[in-house]
View (tube, rainbow, N blue to C red):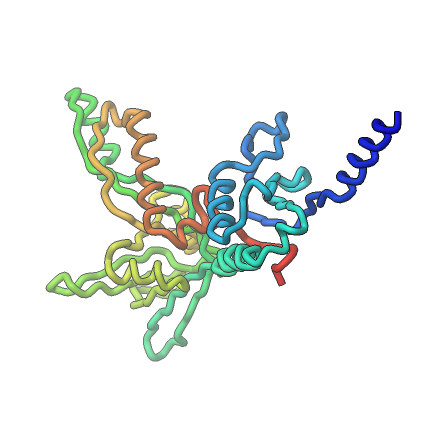
Length: 306
């Protein structure tokens, strides 16, 4: 009996001496990070691998054993990841650096804005429109109209065209621009943006500037082009003087075959995926709005976050 009591006492003492995990950080993203998101009935607290694995690598970069840090999705908010660990792990020197790197990602997500500077004639006041921009939806386009579809259907031909990739950039508030285009000089080297306003007759020269320097550099170099929206609804709004979307043209995707005015679904899906990958290959700011990565992080709260 005495041995049993003694062993029990030692176990109790050991349990008391153990450091219990405590929550030390909350990471909030701009979309769900739950492994089984879209399957609400499962209610899992597991973190999607696209977020979990980069967090594990970041912990290791700061000499923190990821096996000693638990990650779970907040049951009340599936946009948030809760990190927990024993106090001795939280107190490690690398934990401050780990948190600092996460904060740097969140702080890099500055609002993306777009500015139109319009050069109106001297008898009119100059105008500047600065709007917020949200990237995301990919758009596919190709030179194939309704007339082509009818004639090809009659001849039973299967024409092939080049598909092009673009990313829709939604802007708010809308701007009273009815259309815009780029005019080239005779040598085809200089390109001037011109716009048509809802309340002004004729075209007006304009400058377009994105707040993100990397995106602006891609546009100035010609690697990415700005164009009117492909989406019919957005284009209709623009023609009525409510420009609410522009497209960022990324380049050609490959050939597509048309059959009775349609493109094979599998081919269409593969092109959309390729377009998305093309956008993500440019990095920020596209990764701030698209796909799953730590670039979707919007805030860090908890220990070392002040």
